[in-house]
Length: 220
Length: 212
Image 1 (cartoon, chains in turn blue, purple):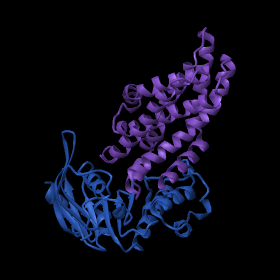
Image 2 (cartoon, chains in turn red, brown):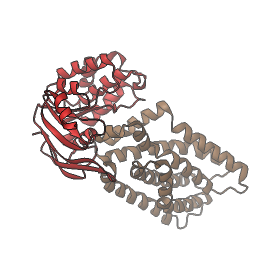
Image 3 (spheres, rainbow over the protein chains, first blue to last red):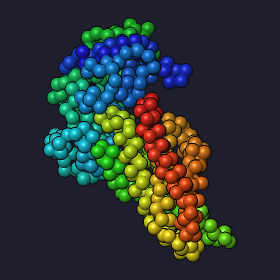
């Protein structure tokens, strides 16, 4: 197992965002975290990626209980927040993060070419379209060749073409993945397994098949 | 050396947007002009007041900008220790502070006709005081990033904490200006000791303050 969550809870003041969440992710497994807005999906992936600490429970990522630099070097995170500096160019952004990950600069060119951004590498990110920003965000997340890719509603704000292109890019990616979405079709397309979260609890953990029916059953 | 990368990234952003520098320089210049029109007998301590108010509004931007743009989470998910982030921000603010000093000191001396007997020592004391101020304000900025009223909360927290530095810098600076250096070691020791202690406190606490 590369990710194990056991009875994880997270409270923000009096609000309990997660209530005893338990699930795990195996190597090379693609898991969708499915649920309506406010169900606790983002909180869960923020805990896994080390952005926040759980209030209770056990989180083990790559065999470690603390999400330290060693663990973070194996993670890649793409979110609806692009995690990019708008007043830096695409190349400057990539160079900065490559420096933090200790990645060679040749990898930057490789990724920017792959994501069709090399020609506009010296443009400020603030002048990019939403789709370009998201492509750059994915390129940034792949700098370190992550063993686990965490995608937190990455298609938010993308048009149909942007979404199609995004899923094409994902198809070439073979490592483990946690993909949060509230879209049943996206979960079925991208992941072989789905963990359905509702009101901070896991209500389904199984194959990404007949999700519409399952979703209806657990929400009724 | 990741703190260096963070400082360089911040400086590059700042020199491109000039969001903080322009504001700080303008604020400092206007303060000096205001003092020159209203204060009959100028004291050297006025210079320190200019630095305090400019710094109080400006140095916190290094962290708060990351919160506003959502890039603080980018640093949280990256393999960089919170202490490296803190030291990067301190280094960035120190460069801004040195630039502010280089701009403000000559204007202040010319406007108020104050020429220190020992100019090098006066500038050194001011730099030490400002550096302590940068360390304290950068460290405290981390504590207020989760608050909604962070820009209002920071000065309230900052003033009592930085009070020993204010008193000591004013004393040491006045001595350097008058040329009477008897006992200057006292306030200088307080400034240096205080900034070292605050650096240690910031280093020890940032792990807890940085991650929710």
